[in-house]
Image 1 (cartoon, rainbow, N blue to C red):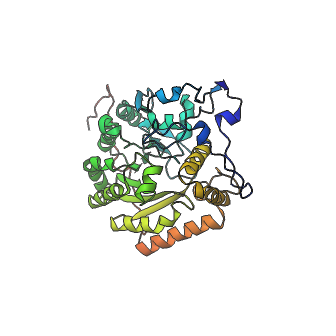
Image 2: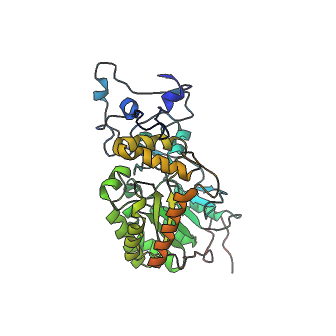
Image 3: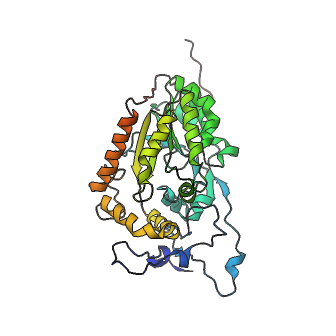
Length: 387
């Protein structure tokens, strides 16, 4: 253990793609990656300390093969005791101003997940900790009902799944998301859901009733139709066929659905844009969107490690294209550009997406949710109206 002032220790150096051709690649997994057996079924290769920690910890073999005795990473779930559940934002890049995240951390383990850096706020690693040390909000339905009942609350669509997935594996037993939907249905409050999980099909009964009143819509992210790539990149998310099945059943139940080609990663899955849209359209989807790969903070190094471990032959090409779309940098968080990028490659991806949508008849009409049915929940002690 050593002071975290050493940036190289907290964020191991990775050879930049702009270095001269033939320069030796510095594979960070050789020095900091967790043993494959210990991280089996996980997305990240390493577990570097969070950026706010005073000290950084790196496992190394002291010659006694003690690393071989360390147990595999197990999923643990702690209780999040937040006193509010609705999070507000004023971002000009997204179409909602409030959201709910029933869980912190996500067991899906998507290596590119832009939410990973949030685990650093908890003193944990955005790497393997993010997908194994989870926090659940069992009081979320009750807290939501309380917030909706507040006299000053003005209803607008609540987005769920914009940070971590509300239908990740632990939802099967916890059923926090279902409890939230029950509250929203009773209150007549609109909701938009984003997920990678076929578990959303469990709640078709509630969502279908809400959709009849224009209160619900669901977006499912389909990153790739290649099962090998999907499993490597999103190890515990639903398989591509299961996501397409979910889109089909949701659409047949009358629930407005959107397929999200997200993220689009140049030289890795960008060639699949048209095929994903075609498969989704055949499943009954009427709307589509896409987001370019984002690499904020620790996500950059985690993605580099993953790419070099799984697709080393594409490493330089992928990052060269990423930088071409990000003004020469690995990531540009500028409003209006962070979701789509800039430059010829970004324009080409956007144009291909638009042409495919036009050909398939997608995005001809957008589902609009309403707040007309909102009925403020009654709080304990409220006097009933005589009229």
